[in-house]
Amino acid sequence: MIAPLSVVLPALTVLWGLRGASGYLTIAALVLLENFGIPVPGETALIAGAAYAGHGHLNIVAVAVVAFIAAVIGDNIGYAIGRSAGRRLVTRYGRYLLLPPARFARAEQFVTRHGPEIIIAARFIEGLRQLNGIIAGTTAMPWRRFLAYNVLGAALWVAVWAALGNYAGHHLATIEKNLRQYQWYAIAALALLAGAYAGLHILRRRRNAHHEPPRT
Image (cartoon, rainbow, N blue to C red; front, side, top):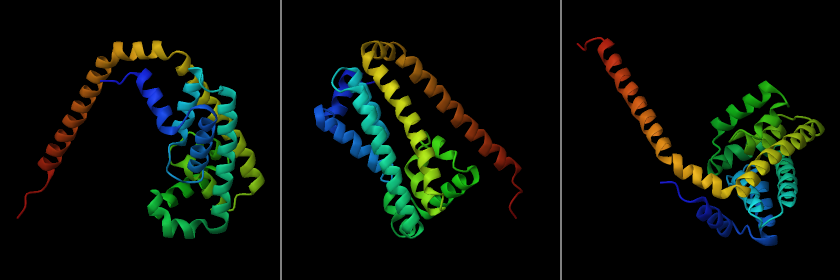
């Protein structure tokens, strides 16, 4: 059963300290840390802070400005780390940050293949958002070019999630009512999808077993 948003949102704000001036510091810290590779919920903190602003407890402009500055600074810290010791640090410590060398190599190849424009899109891709600064540094992307795309990407990312979070905060009661009204339909749809997936998996295994040559 879906927990009431009127309960979840205050719980998140108390948990992260999203109240008063400390709320802006919490958002800034989590967004900054996430943007140079630390696995913390920076994006979630931005959305929760924007929703709390929509509920009247924070200022949405201040939330957006703080998140934007923290995102740009965090990515530039990541760039500096990548430029100075990126691969060495990933090889040695990456597994402790959920970043094994193989995963980093795949992300690096992806960014290299698509060029600096991917810095903008990476803001909205889980995994790349945390790594794009470090990867840009390790691939020796010119800093001015990285900064330009980084600033544009951060502005778009903050604008999207701040607007959506703020809207949710303003319409909390309506959203909660709609979720309660349709939650069982959503649960039934998920159950049907899970059953269909399991059925296809079983049929595929039986088909593969049928086509396997007999053992001698």
